[in-house]
Length: 65
Image (cartoon, rainbow, N blue to C red):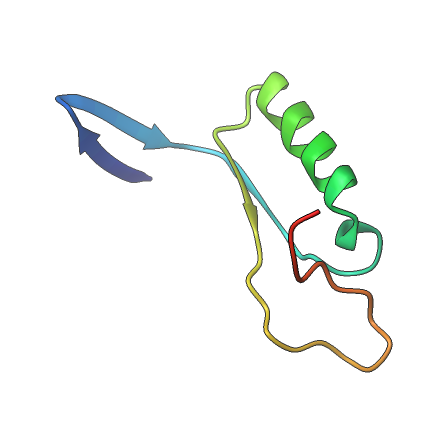
């Protein structure tokens, strides 16, 4: 369990989603929708892989929309 303290508050991440920015998830609008759904469902975090390279022809989200 990760923990940090900010302004006297303790925050604990218990469950999170860690998703790759490839194929269907290279669409930033879809990733934003999934993040909103994860938050509404009570997930503690939504994290996106940080990749610099992918296989040839693999769609990758590499800039903001």
